[in-house]
Length: 85
Image (cartoon, rainbow, N blue to C red; front, side, top):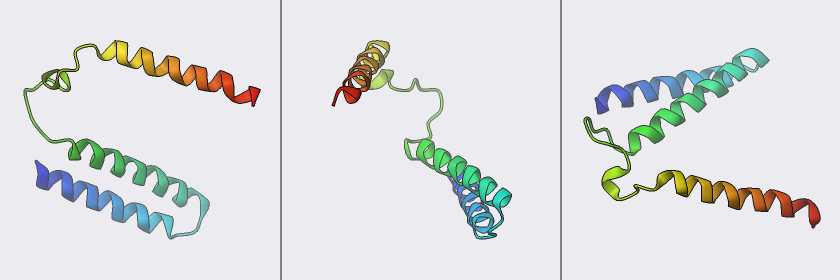
């Protein structure tokens, strides 16, 4: 599984670089989106590839929705305070 993903990430990155170096607008946009997909797959794969295990629950994060609400509230305060400065 790791070998397959590493080959996929390498192929996507190489294709993205090729498209970015073409210089025309449409291939550059395709290259940027392909590079974004490759980075996302790389980040997911760097977290570990395990099967039949629950993500985040075994690490003790059982109140994850509360954590998201707390972070959204903080970001909302920042967004309200910025125009005042």
